[in-house]
Image (cartoon, rainbow, N blue to C red):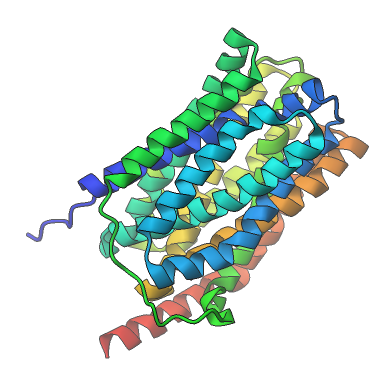
Amino acid sequence: MMRKTPLYTKDFLLHCFSYLIMAVSFYLLLPTLPTFVTDVLGENKDKVGYIIGIYALSALLVRPISGYLFDKYGRRKLFLISMLLYAVVMASYGLAASFGFLLFLRLINGGVWGVVTTGGGTITSDIVPEGRRGEGIGIFGLSMTLSMAVGPLIGLQILKESGSYSVLFVTAGVLCLIAVGMSFMVNHPAIGNRQNKLEWANVFEPKVLKVSLVMLFLAFPFAGVMSFITLFAKELSLESTGLFFLIYAAGVSIIRPLTGKMMDKKGPGFVMVLSFAGTISGLVLLSQSEEIYGFLIAAFVLGLGNGIVMPTLQTMVINMVRPHKRGVATSTFFSSIDLGIGIGAFLLGNIAEIFSLSQMYLFCAFITVIPMVLFFGITLKDYKKKIEILTAATNV
């Protein structure tokens, strides 16, 4: 009986934990920046869409070149430098005394985030065994999931105990520095190709375009949930934003390890059926929520649906390219997330301002039908065809 290639190595665990701590710093601000904008800076709630949108679009601009640099020069130095810069910017939020300066910080922060997350995803695909890639990427994704549960709770508790946004922002910066220290101890695989020229083929991977388009549309509802859930809870007179994230993360944590293994054994079709069903159902439930129980049930169902999306589609992307193209493939994939969140945050902020937050979430449910049709009508067939071609070429 053949032994499984080990997944839980020292490098894999250190990489996951450092990414977890870095992501906690990100999620500290998720439920607190919207209230900072409305209560401290005195802006309308449509401005919340701007601080989320400019962050995502900034990351989008940086990702293509960062994917190229990771493939050309390797992973370690660029990843560690970007993590350190991220820590500095996070601590600098305490200097934001105007909405204009906050937007500037979000612009810089988004760009650095684009480099960090591109590197984190690429390094994960290098470290995990090929035969356990779906499982490994799913487990790595739990770093973000757990941070999604812990981060908002910590952020809200810091504000409750200290009443100070400055303490919140400094805490975020310190957590990032701890993450940098842990990343220094990871033995990053030496993958790079100095012959790579700065050209279109090395900053954008067309092979993964159809998968990335599905992710782009699925990022719309994600932007709506993450950007406006604090304000929606406030509108419903619920003091449960932290609990929403905790229940949401519980749903993701339950489903991700299972779907990663199913993806490796059965392929992406079946697990994506579950994903679309959960996402659409969760958004409808959220739009109809008027009290705490419906609000939290919607969080759990959304967690089940959204927990499948990222590791499944990211594994598809990695499976479609050779190792020296993983950086650009990852950047292309994550760029679609940034673009979807950026456009979604701007668009949904205006819909919420004109209509209501509950109607905005119902609109998100209808939008999710588009990537569902695209995935099962075009993307899945394209994926299977390209996997066959790549496998045949590898075996020659």
